[in-house]
Image: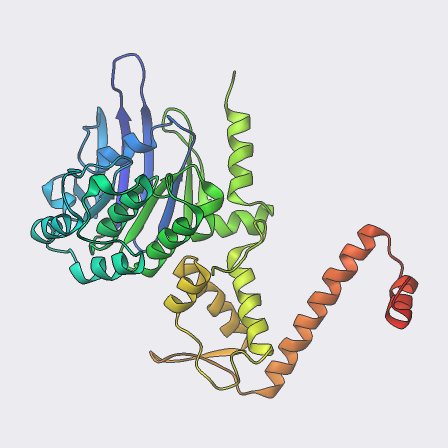
Length: 237
Length: 119
């Protein structure tokens, strides 16, 4: 069974244009998968549909074999691109909230990681810098024991040292029963982490997919190089 | 500090070579236990599946063996270690020769350098 499966998926925000057009993909369990594509190609739209925040125009999404619902939401730990926490909250209130809300939440894990990062849990979210806020968010999301982690641009706003910590957090929390889906355009930073990759073009089409090491082995190219080539060729001005 | 990788070579292969080099240099001595997949993954900052693959390849050569659920150990077989040492040496020399050919360095120039310290 696949952790995530999309069948003939369509999404349009208005009648003129499909943001996602006939997308089909299958992601097995135990993988770290990169969803890579240029800005505006529909990566976040796809993730939001999987998270149940947007309705597909047509087609099917299955998470561990089940259609999107409150039940599948409990399998998913989702890191949105933008923060959704109430900025008046203190970090420890956020921890209490997660503890109450998610049965798979591991409070000790959060406290441990926040200590590593030197983040004071008595701080209000609004007093934290953008990067620190992002770190807190990622820590919360990775402290759940979910089947599917969806991280939408997890390293966009943080410095290189914190980037390493975040990527290491993903590795350290990896378990063979769960799948991590990362969207990013910072490919060179994440590519050594990825098992599988999908290149998403405009219209949500999968231009290319496969195993990251196979690309390096068979073509002698990094994913970053491949990405630059792919999107140079496919865009018509 | 995360390990450094070349972008164009498969990551598992680079890990395989690095762990093999660390075994040959004595960082992981014969008959001792290797770090776990997770420890390697965190240290190298790469996907655990990739570490698994690299260790699997090392197991195939015999330099590493697996003891059930306990973990993986470095071989105590001196023949295998010697054979792997030879392979590693050969690879380094071949890489060097490949880059010298592309620079047009002749065999004689290499010999001169080794003897005289200059060409």
